[in-house]
Every structure is written in structure tokens, then in C-alpha cells.
Image (cartoon, rainbow, N blue to C red; front, top):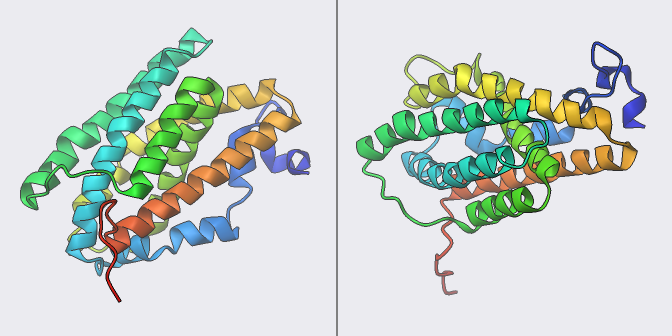
Length: 234
């Protein structure tokens, strides 16, 4: 069983969700995320400008609802000490929007656009969970941050100075993603310590669902798949 592995334990011997997830390093799921063509080509500077522009457009739409999800969750947490860290996570996402993405919207003349089907499904999943179950929402929020940290960390040795997307990488490689991940990890581990095996299994399931949504999102960006695209006639 997952909970029997010592890598799932915190310093005080209690079961922590972050330990459960980190024990899956090297799994096919992590490999699929790290080796997704979007991430590989982003790191080696071969990703098309059109794919990157579409990604920025869709990620901006995603972050709008991600921020809403964080704030809804912050308003519902039982432990008041967790409100400030969640607000700081939301502020970090807003900084990405204000500083990095507004820059790219201007440089590449990106329009605000509409959500792709993949973006719509992902944000709907986030928002509906935040209304229905606070700690499931925290699990998903942590999963999103953790996945991005893993992917960004995998790129560190591959990004060269002449990479046209280095500004994006440097911004995400900074303290915002890392500090947000630490803040959410503390909250999700606190919850994991209080619940039983069924709830922990559900948390792991939610991580898998979040990972699949991320993979779908990258697929959409890589293929520039818009919600309202008309299928080609054959």
C-alpha cells in the first residue's frame, strides 16, 4: 500500500500527501509530463511561436479561474492560519498575469480570445470542486503547482541563453511557483494527516486527474486546438 512506504512520512512520522506524490518520481505519469512535446520543444527552443502564443492566451484564461478557485478556497478553510498563504498564492498568480503575460500579450499582439475545450474543462473542474469540497480543491491546487515545479525543474539544464522563451522560464523558475508550492504543500499535508485511507486514495486520484488535465492542456497548446474550430471536410 502507498501509505506503508517510509517516503510518505513527514519528519514527525505522520503520513504526508507530498511524500506520497514524490514517491512517484520516475513513473510513467511523470515521464509523460516531462517529455511532452510542448515542454521538450519549449526547453530546446523549437516550439512554434503560434503554439506558444496560444499557450499564453489559454494560460491567462486558466489563471483567471485558478485565482478565483484559490480565493474561494481561502474563504472556506477551517484553519484561519491557512488563509494568508492561500491569498499569497493568488497574488503570485496575479503577478504572473500582470507582469509576464501582459508583456507577451503586447509583444506578440495576442488577443484575449476564448477558452479551448481543454481549458474550459480544466477550469470548470477547478471551480466546481472549490464550491463542493474545500480540501479536494486544495489537493488540486497543490497538484497544479507541484506538476509545474517538476516540469520547470526538468528544464533547468536544457534552457540556453538564446532560447526565445527564456523570459517565461526565468519567471516560472523564480520564487513564485516554488513558494506557492511550499505554501500549498503545508496545507495539503496538514489535511492528509487528519484523514483515513479512503480520503488519501481520493487525494491521489485527484492528483492523477489534475495531471491528465495538464497533459490535455499542453496537447491543446501544442496543436493550437481551439474550441470553435470547424472540422476539416474530407
